[in-house]
Length: 372
Image 1 (cartoon, rainbow, N blue to C red):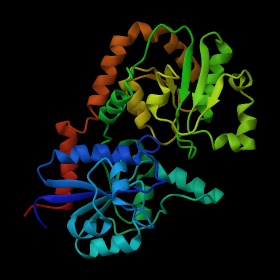
Image 2 (spheres, one colour; image 1 turned 30 degrees about the vertical axis):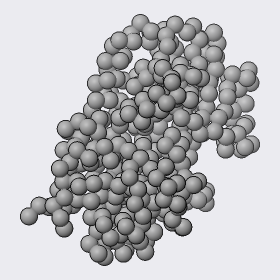
Image 3 (cartoon, rainbow, N blue to C red; image 1 turned 60 degrees about the horizontal axis):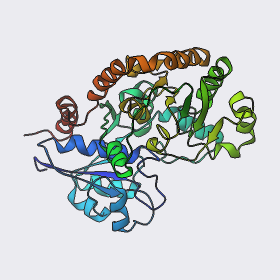
């Protein structure tokens, strides 16, 4: 194996695949490509379509990917390391690749133990079956290690390593520039418009508790809450169960709630909302947190991972969350400078260009490809 490595990131780049803001895979690949590009061990980092089925047109795949794109056949013959993100490579491809000496790693993006358990119980389709695939290692972020690290070890039959969560404002700032948007929190609104932007794919990150929290704040101070926008919710509103739940909320009964399909943060925060309300269970960090903090938006959350950032409430306590939200409404505008300093300090620790982050990923490369 050469000392310099050719690395590929396997993604779903088909026509129906989630875009940059509809799922986390393309963002994760963007940041992973950034951190790897700083390593002298890496000759190049590319992407390819690793989803099952017919390979998409290369021009279309290139338009989706955040990195230069090669074909699956080129990936088999040219790459030393493949990191799959957001999918499980077909077993035949993985077997062929590892048989010729390639190394396969899976980067997991969420608390799969909970999500997969729900899919098994309710017989729902899942994107990637929890099964071995000749992995040399499985990588998890710190936010998911406690809830799903051992699950990945036993179902993937590979060593699990915690790697740093990466985030950069570059994709968001680029999108804002293309739209001509001055994307940041604007103070001095007497009543906040709220946003809930959980993916709603499982109870790991769903809108139910944030909606109860927002409704409790509205019941206490109806003059302080203008309304709430819920993204990734179009499928939910088709459910009689969810509709029964939603119509128990005063915000919904008074027509103050809007349910959208998947939406980019730049289309919601600022344009439709002044603050983000979040809740995660067994998964204490998401890109939506980072995006909100970068824009200076009040973040009401239950994550210990975020340290002193935002406004934190107890894990399953919407009443405390409502109290945090109303306290944020009273004090956020007076503390914008200190809020921004705290957020910048936290986000700097996630920067893919930071030497500490580069060193952490280089350590994994050295473990996978020891130098003679």
